[in-house]
Length: 207
Image (cartoon, rainbow, N blue to C red; front, side, top):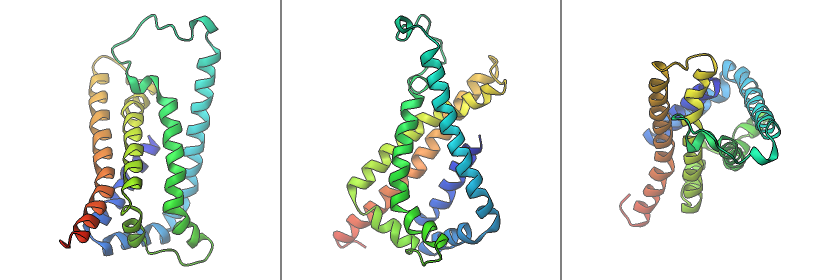
């Protein structure tokens, strides 16, 4: 749930780049100088690491908890079973791999430089340069799709883990999970598409 809140906040701040360059620079400066944010960053990193390690533990436990001849047998498929629920670990691996790519594009040139006491790259220009490459844009959209499937299941299953799994609440939570995941996917996808389209318009003499 903590990571879900972070994703929504991260999306809101990143969408500032679509509104204006100055607004995005102000948002980045706020994230870089606010003391509360500086405290929350290591907490977030720790939470993310715990999330990954626990996911590996659960996957390993599920794998070793069944006899070899039963690992691929599915005696009962429930209504809540979905493709995402069956592939959460694979989706998680994809998300992590692309997160490393994301760090090389942005974090290394911004937050890391600030941590080292150096001046980082202009954040808005960094976004423009990164998403002017159509291949990188496609890779990011693939990443956003993996995040969509991952959180479309993770959202409602998180609430199920704390006991909200009765017949009344489960359909509502699944609907909210889909709605949240769609908003996250469309919001993040808008950013590379917007800057790629701006580049195409500039190349065509329209900007």
